[in-house]
Length: 598
Image: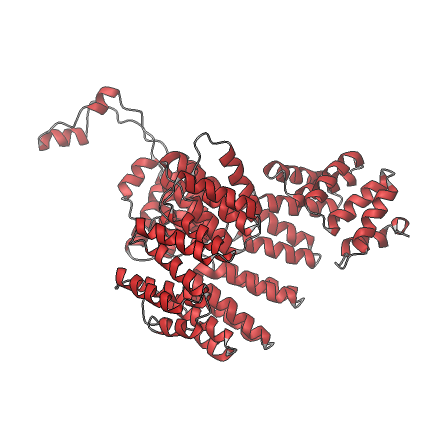
């Protein structure tokens, strides 16, 4: 397995690509003959060169794929970039990427978007680049990294698979670890995908086994965790990440001595591996061995005395093990570090919250300036403000931050929309979303914001506006199963355009045949068309996957129409007797009082 690397491993920074190379690569010329390819260029005199440049007795091959429009805009974009007008350059490259779908233009757009700190634009371009260059490992790795950054883990896994097949390198552990830390609900889905991939391999992968161990641990499956971890260690006994996990599992089971023994053995084999020393310090602190932990900390610092990352790691361990005063002292030494200060202030704010000092926490969070720490600090600040019922201050902070950090605009806009939606102020929520869309680069829109806008319009019963939003989304992402299903279900449930809605749902089902919400929509569409037996099949599968009350309402009505009335009443009664709200079942019973359970 490749050693663990930071997230940046998955995508390289912006690099200049000569415009001449770009123009040449975008054109298509006749293939040279093998003999011409093999021969090196011959030295020629200036006069001969002039004759070659302006031949009089030969016809130049026609160049396809380039035209005046394309050349003009590429030149305009490059000149804008030379003048540091990245916004204008990016707008042009994104427009050309969407228009031409050319992988080289998409690659250039990807790097410019990353350099301009526009992650959504970078992702959009990278997907086109990776799709157009399926055999390019850089394209697959970059797409995976940007998808991971946007927490689109299942799609990231697909690109990591392609990257491994092209390069023989893998980092599934990085993907799994990032997912576990994010608390994203797709953990089970990713586990199943990775397990299926592992089972079909003739040559097992320690990286894949360790990733499965991390995911199964998060899912609470101790037996599978131990199985996958043992597989990983058998394949690669010195795998540091696997040894860390093994020690942690022993420690959490109350066997600190066993954990320390494993770590000591691993350290003897790899005495300069800082991660093992950090895990040892964590184990000692958990066991209350404070003096031993301090000695371990001193040794870690001696290994890399000029590395402030080590001190930050120590502070995190101190926080994790309840050494809050020591952690604060460690962090306060790092507040002026140019690369770490954002993370440091975030941790100091969290410590202040723990000490029930909200004003101090807000002051610390206000020092954070960029990236994921800024997003986390803003979320924490909003929570503190809402605890005081200061809604307007929370929204003002979100607006300030999304203008300050365009790369976080979408996440912050969605957070503000959620606050306004919870207040029932859908009109203000729509305006708030449009404010976020206005901050996007020119010629860009956000599928996430469009989808949220569509759902708000649905809540306001403005189906025409909802359809406009979803159609715009589908222009950007024509294979968005979520948008296809949402539009299709709305047409089926709320209009007489049932056949049109069914076609959209069927397309969504072809893209994602296991999603319970799509199976439910498909079953409901068939029910509305009078195809009750077919509807039952899909609705029962949907309910088996997600036994919620909306699917139950659809399934119960279908069972009733098929004559299975006792089964329908039992299903409804089970949900009505639960503590969960049943708005869809309530609407069904109002519409069909004959179905009401006795």
